[in-house]
Image (tube, rainbow, N blue to C red; front, side, top):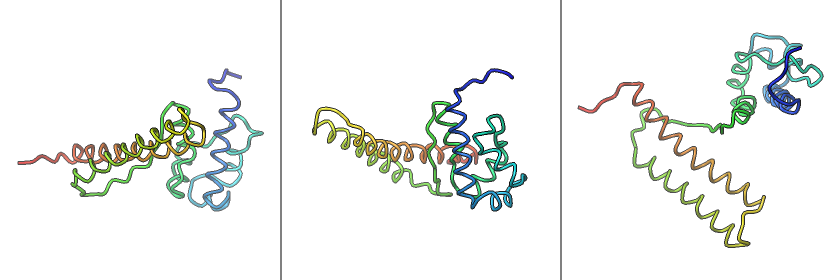
Length: 161
């Protein structure tokens, strides 16, 4: 057997994310109806007793698309040191001022929450950190929305005349 890159705990967490995804899809029978593999394969992908069998990326993509839940992708992003955030770009939305205002508001919310936490006891405790992460995620989502809209503009080759 070849060496693995990650600890057993990491692989177990990927299995857990897969089980959660299959459950979100309505269980193995329902999940099997939206992807190319059967119930037993889906069970194997989430079984911690089977440490070498994982869901193929197309199967995970089918299930995440069907459920709207990116459990496995989020776990992989975290493993890669990245943060996964949903981006909702409004097609044809050219309201750049709205996007900048959203970024300003969300960034301001982050500053306010950090300042409140520090003002309370000079530091940020675990409960406050959870609240602040929520605010940070909202700010990142606002930036991601702007980035996605700009990418759409580039992809469409839109230029002003």
